[in-house]
Image 1 (spheres, rainbow, N blue to C red):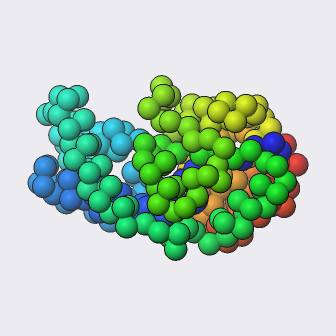
Image 2: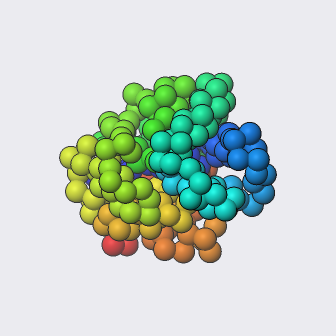
Length: 220
């Protein structure tokens, strides 16, 4: 194992609640649609535009708006979201992550962020973690979002490590599929039923350790 590729939301911090709050407000104000709480999982781990398209489909409005109008609505959502995440602090880092980053750094493992979020640099800065990562993959530079492997391939490329020498950490099914498609070892955080394609699954981030990742890598 030479590199570890981190998803951001649900692995390093939990901003899903802020995402869904912003999407719900957008749906209500711009589309006059109320999103059910269960719809939050449909938007997990995918890009902003993909999320916007799923909401439009749910509302039966997928053909009503131009690409430009969809982009404008997605930007409106992002402004709502940025206002929420500007309140993030080090206290919002998920349990075990700071220790894991220290362990990986002590073992000279390269660290890269593979998030669908264009706000990843801003979020990491608010958490005080930006300098602990060697690279952050830019989702704007990849052709396809998760479950396609593109963002994980880019994250590995940015630390000059072959994907086959990397472990990826994800909490979403689409993310696990993307890690596997990239040729890396997948460690899932959450339900072993939902993330059954992962090589190893832990219940929560507090269970993530260097040795757990090393063991998962050894299974390949």
